[in-house]
Amino acid sequence: MTDYVEEQRNELEALESIYPDSFTVLSEKPISFTITVTSEAGENDETVQATLKFTYAERYPDEAPLYELLSQENLEDSDITDILKLLREQADENLGIVMIFTLVSAVQEKLNEIVDQIKTRRDEENKQKEKEAEEAEKQCFHGTPVTIENFLSWKAKFDLEMLEFKRKKVKEEEQSGKNKLTGKQLFETDHNLDTSDIQFLEEGGNSVEVDESLFQEMDDLELEDEEDDPDYNPAHLESD
Image (cartoon, rainbow, N blue to C red; front, side, top):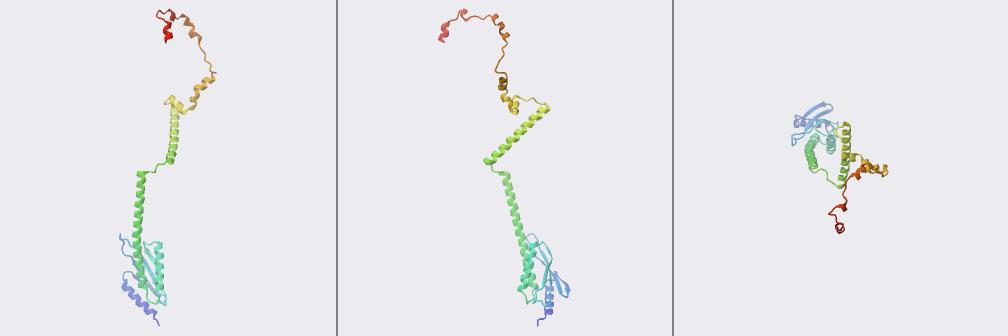
């Protein structure tokens, strides 16, 4: 018949000698204790840590011990889930023999893997940041490729903005009275002037009044007749 109490006490003494700095007994009935497990230092001296609490079942080791993760440092929630799953698997595989050292060793290896994963994640994050920085730098130098579509869209927007700017400027000048509009500005701002001359003629009925007084003195002017000119020769006109 298995003496469970004896086996448990023997294992407890062995664990205390293996983990002198991280082993702590919490109670004698039931026997409960903690072991703190720390990973090896990573590339930048980062570590992860887990404090495991074990409680012997009455028929341990034929029954699995109770276990829980009492505290942790630098572990993600997914890491904690993986550690608890690992403890359950190891406990099922080692029923019938004392197993605490085996469970703690498995967790130790898992923590070392997590430290390596942290390095891998950090390297991937740095690579991603470098890639994003390179893309941003390329955008600064190359900008957006010009196509017919985006150029026409930009040109239409630019023309509208310039037209609005000119209108505002002319309006401001009119209101301030600083400058009188030139003929060109008038035609640019008021297209009715394009047909103003035609409209003037139409309204006047195409009639032009002549001041006859301007010609009353014509008779008093001494104009020589071409025939009185001694050098006048009609033949020259015909030859021309």
